[in-house]
Image (cartoon, rainbow, N blue to C red; front, side, top):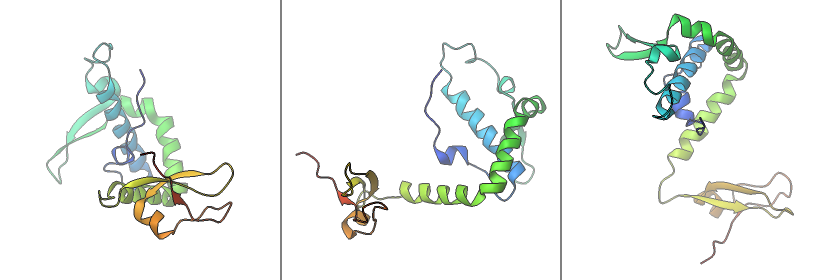
Length: 156
């Protein structure tokens, strides 16, 4: 089975980065939910219950909503991954927060300010995607050639 990496907001949905242990568990839950969504109907896993993936549902007493959590056997199965994620979140929380902030800002770009492809004056040139307004203002500079990124002319 092959699938694309889930969207960052799907991976970090309901994740509180201030609690590395809880955040790591929630990330694993979110990834397992994404895997369940991508299973082909021809796979033997297609008709498996969530418990087979290591998930179970509970009712959140505070919100009275159903939420997915790791079942005890799921926690046992994914314990090494959870511990590694917990360590990463504990040590690199600021990077994850910045990544989520940038992802959110990029997702909110309006049709009036779409993403465009821009290039610098390096040889060969670096090519990046930016909001059109940033390229037009010349606010983003290449670290190597120090020139502002310019809009690539699209063939007409």
